[in-house]
Length: 241
Image (cartoon, rainbow, N blue to C red):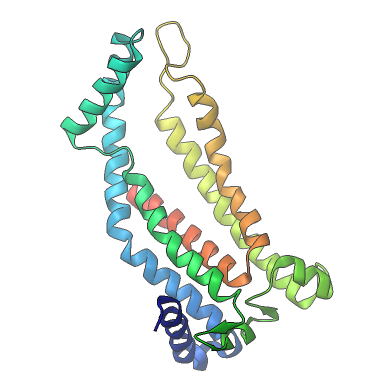
C-alpha cells in the first residue's frame, strides 16, 4: 500500500469518527483535525525556532560590531558571522524547519483532492463538502456555479473573512517584531546589508498572500492553509511573549 493510499485511509477514518458531530462536513473537520495533529507534531521545532529568534536578537549587537569591523572585507565578515553563530550554537535556518516539514502534508492533501482514484478505486473523498462547497472545488468553480453570493460562494466569503482576520493579526505581530528589532545601520546612516530594510518593510504584508492561496487551491488545501496559518499566529504570539 502506498503512502498516498495510507494517507487517504487516515482522512477517511477521521471523517467517519467525526461524522456524528459534523455530518456532511465531517471530511472538512477531519482536515482541520489532521492539520492540528501535524502542527502539534512540529511544535517542538516551533519552540526551537522561537529560541533561535531570541538568540538571533541577542547576537544582533555583536553582528553589528563585526559589520563595522570588516566593512571593507565581505569574506572575512561572512566567516566571522558564521563563526559567531557556530560558537553560540545558533542556526540562522532554525526558523525554516517547521514550515518545510509541513509541505509534504499540504502536497498530500492537494494531490488527494485532485485525484479521481486512490489505490485503483474511486476517490470517495471527492464527494465530501464544507457546507455547500465541494472539497475538491476551487473559488473559480464556486463563482461559475452560483456567483459570489451563491451557496458555495458564501462558504468562500466566510473563509476569506477568517483568513483576512488571521493575516491582519500576523501583520500586527510582524510589525511589532520589526519595531522591537529594527534594521541595523552603519556609521554613515546607511543599511549595513543593502536591501535588508526593504525586505523588512515588505515582510509584514506577506501574510495577506494566504488569501491568494485559499482562492486558487482546492478547498481541502485551503482548509489546511487556513488552519495552519491560524495555528502559527497563535503559537508565535504565545512563544514570542
